[in-house]
Image (cartoon, rainbow, N blue to C red; front, side):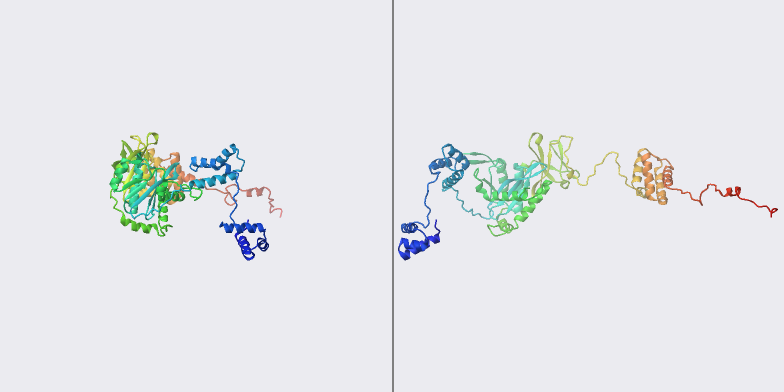
Amino acid sequence: MKSDGEIMEILEAYDLTQSLRAAAQLAGCSHHTVAKHVAARDAGRPLAEPVARDRVTDEFLPKIEQWVDATKGRIRADIAHTKLVGMGYEGSERSTRRAVAQVKAAWKLGRVRVHRPWVTEPGGWLQYDFGDGPYIDGVKTVLFVAWLAWSRFRIVIALRDRTAPSVFAALDRSFRLIGGVTTYILTDNEKTVTVSHVAGVPVRNQQTVDFARHYGVTVLTCQPADPASKGGVESSVKVAKADLVPKDTNLLPEYGSFAEVEAACEAFMAHINAREHRTTKRKTAVMLAEEALRLHRVPETAHTVSFGLARTVPPNTPMVTFNNAMYSVPSHLLGARVFVRAHGTGPDEQVIIVHHGAHGPVEVARHGRARPGSPAVNDEHFPGHVEKIPGDYTPRARTGAEAEFLAIGGGAVTWLKEAAAVGTSRMNVKMAEAVSLAKIAGVIDVDRALGTAAIHGRFAHGDLSSILHAGRASTITHVAREETSLTQGTGAWAAITTTIVSEDKQ
């Protein structure tokens, strides 16, 4: 096939010579080629238009069109190829795929949904949806994602479940975070919002109706199975899951606690709302400041009806009572008001405790169902607590003499406990003796002697001095030397062999 440039050269040569053969010689091609392109130009056809050829799939196109229409464009090419082979088709699977793709494209033409840009007003719409969060202790969490349609401000809150109280608490926190309540809320048709449809009209959940009345907002739902009607929050959910849930694509480590997930959500919101949005070319946090002026006021008290029964935490014990059983709450809530409710049934039943603070209702504790007399206690709710075991006493000096004795060391503490346990008499006198010995013999040796006395139960008068002296004596080594030895010498033996010369012989 000739290129466009070559065709133009052929036509130019023909226009100069007005001869097919002469133009062919100038262009370096056959005169039949010159005639074909000249005829195409005279007929008004595009230059270098490909010649239509019969394809091996042409005979089966009606059947392929029937399958595509019956499956609404969902049939797979490999399935169509298998069916065509059974009907005598001898072409390749590649030809089948090409034919199925062309038929699908023709079928979708005219059936494609056309999206018109949604022009919103400040303070009008808040959309929310959910995404699967990371696992904490083997339990999957939930990411509540809200999106303001005008400013594109995004909110991500970690939840433990998708029950109505948890959703209402997240919405209240969202309102307080953005500084007001929007006119409308748009979400899916979940049971917490829509209980059923009658003639295509959604029937609202009574709890949602009460919630909307409390905040002065209208709750609307999108068409069933139509996520495109709230595409803004759908996109936000994808981004939040990609950045917060540990995956191979982001190399995030596993979270150790639910508090770490909450901190990650806070960091994600601070990061994504501080950068410029690609559609508005403005920072979402700046646009939120403008939109907040169009929002109506958030009620000072949250809609707490769905949070459970109200309880007041005692001023000295962070425990609340629910159904005759006791449950712990964080110690900073002493004297505060909380709401307690039960969730689930059977062995999976849980007791959830919510506190309404300055930033809205927040779940502060979650326990398994407890029985009367067996309280549910979380050790993290009692920071700095040291469990007291009967019989395990911690010595504390009340006088200067006691302080001096305990300062000797661990052996002195052990001696005090053991001596007191067996009812040793005159302990103060013996402790003063140990202090005096420590000043003479050294603290280390006396502390070791006290530990030995405690182990062997020697608490009588003089036992400490005896142990101390025995320990010190056992460490003295005597070395015998010539000048200090008491052994009798051999100097007297010299007289036996010495010759005495008398004076008479001289």
